[in-house]
Every structure is written in C-alpha cells, then in structure tokens.
Amino acid sequence: MFDNWYNNRLGRLAARCLATPFISYIAGAFMDSPLSKPMIKRFARQNGIDLNQAAETRFKSFNAFFTRHLKDGLRPLCGEGLFASPCDALLSVYTIKDESRFQIKGASYSIADLVEDEGIARDFSGGRCLVFRLTPAHYHRYIFPCDGSIIDHKKIKGIYHTVRPTAVEKAQVLRTNTREYVLCETEEYGRLLIMEVGALLVGRIVNHKTSGDFSKGEEKGYFEFGGSTVVVLAQKDRLNLDRRFDTQDEKSVYAGEALTNPF
Image (cartoon, rainbow, N blue to C red; front, side, top):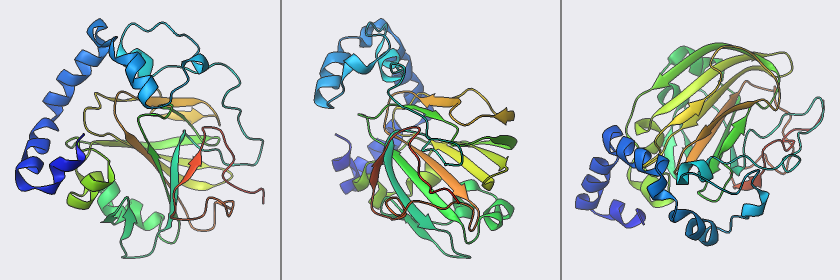
C-alpha cells in the first residue's frame, strides 16, 4: 500500500506526515479498540496466518490478535550452548568493518548511526550485525537469545517509516525510526546489543525488561501492529554462526531456532 508513496516527492511528504508519533498513536488507539476486530479474519487470510496456532482465538481487538501468544511447544528453544533466534523473521547477516557502511534492506548505514554512540560502535568493530525483518505475517513477540545481564538501555526517538524495500531506497529508515536497545554482557558470547525498530503505524515497542539478568528464551517484548525489525550486534569472533544463516541473503528463521554451531 505504502510503496508507491516513496516514488514521488508529494507521496514522500504525505508518508512523512502520516508517520509522525501523534498519527501513529491515533492508529494504535484504533487498533486497541473493539472497532478493529472486523479486520482480523481478512488480515489473517491475506497473510496466510493459521489462527489455530494461537493460544486463544477470541480477540478483543486487532492488536490483541497481532500480539497473540502461540500454543505451547510451537516454538521450541534450542539446546544449551546454542544462540537462539530472538523472533520469527527473515534474517540477513553483515560483517561490521571499521569506518565502513553496510546495507540493511537496500540502504547504507554505519553502526554509529544506528546506535548514536561512537564508543558502542567501536566495541562491535569487526563483529556481526544480524538483521531480523518481521513481515505482517510473522509472530510479533521476541525473546532473549541467550543468558546474560543488561548493562545499559536506551530509547532513540524518531518518526515511523515503513520498512518495505521501496521505502528504504528513498529514506534511511533505521535512522529516522524510533528504536530501543539494551547493551548486554554474556558469558558465552561477550557483549551483545539487541535493538528493536518501529515502523509505520506501529503504536509501540513494548519491552518487559530493561535492566537486570535475563534467561535464554525469556520473552523480551513484542511489537504492536506493523512490520518491524530486530537488530543484534555481536563482537568479533564471538558468534559461530551456522553457514546457512551467515549470509546477506534473507533466510527464514523462527523464535528459539539455533543460529550457531557449538564451539
């Protein structure tokens, strides 16, 4: 729906107006209301969502459906010593090079731009950037990929832009979107940064924990309505990624799925 807007100046201006936090708040309020319930069945049908996988099938609003829990056992957690995918998504992986820029969905970014902190960016020089792109059809809850402790938490204000590929070609999406991240210390994988990125008409990024210890598989939070992105930064030589996933070509992954090989 929004792709064509980014192909001309007027469309991009309209998208920018609609992408303000206030408009996103109004859209989110509607999605939280019973008035949004008629949208559920059509959305599920158009996106191939199996409602039989939901823990509950009666929803009070569209957002209640969108943030639904799944039945127990549908997202098994990988075993000890393996790094888990934090969410259902399309995963692409990049090497972080000093002073370089790399591609995230067709646009060029530096880590310093992404986190707005030169010191943190230096910590991840030579490491890996894992980009998990969630489509509307994906399950929108995400988990911690390993055990660890949160040492810092930051929210970066922005405006909400769609993460659709055409939009990314016209605007630096991750620089203008609202994002939120935690900086973590882990025994197995060193320092990690886990970031959530909001998109057009996403009312909120909802995180349950922003300090203290966390456990692998523990639910970290969820996205309300809209396509969204999770980014994980890992330090050099700390993630022994399975070769299937160690590519810039998007690969489908599921929450809890092992992304690494055991050392």
